[in-house]
Amino acid sequence: MQTQTGILTVVSGFSGSGKGTIMNRLMEKYPQNYALSISATTRSPRPGEMDAREYFFCTKERFEEMIAKEELLEYACYVENYYGTPSAYVQEQLQAGKDVILEIEMQGALKIKRKYPDSVLLFVTPPSFEELKRRLTNRGTESPEAVRARLKRAGEECEGVEHYDYLIINDELEACVSQVHSILQNEHTRLSRREAFINQMKQSFMEYAKGE
Ligand code: 5GP
Image (tube, rainbow, N blue to C red; front, side):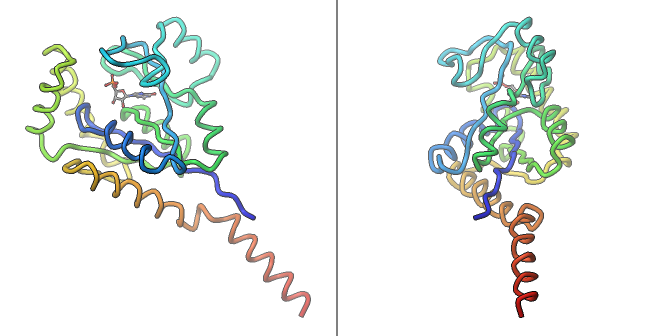
């Protein structure tokens, strides 16, 4: 029986695009299909965030040690903090056949695409700029300067969006969740991901022909 490894899936989107909510709902609906990677970061926890749930919160020294020991699949600096993906969990879940979701920003996403060309990159955006600004301001967890820095960064991220494979416009949560699930299910049927299956079929045909 041929087993298939999972798809390395990258989800980015403007801060305030609602990508986290979409991914949490996706995990809730299809826990057998997906695994969400937990990143390490040097930023401070926001109220309500827990270590090892939202992030592995760590010091700059510990983060730099992880870089030196090559424990990260990718990392980037975002609004003056380090963020990175610990590789062990990702590799383990992919081998177990789960699609692993990395919710990361663009620099990291592009590094992943270069390193793993068969990864799938999704970009999530709110329906308009006004809506993005409103969501970021209403979140209330960020100072006005931090909101400005995030909006500025969002503007810069528009520039790289063409490197992504799919654009998800977050208008309605359940519709977005279904869209992401369909995309990934369809990706599994891509011929390039089914090489082992095809080779097995070819082998069987050859053996059959020899026996004729
Ligand atoms: P936040 O501080 O709002 O939680 O995250 C800021 C940005 O960092 C978001 O765009 C988030 O997707 C991104 N991010 C979170 N974890 C990682 C990571 O492991 N690597 C990279 N490159 N970006 C990350």
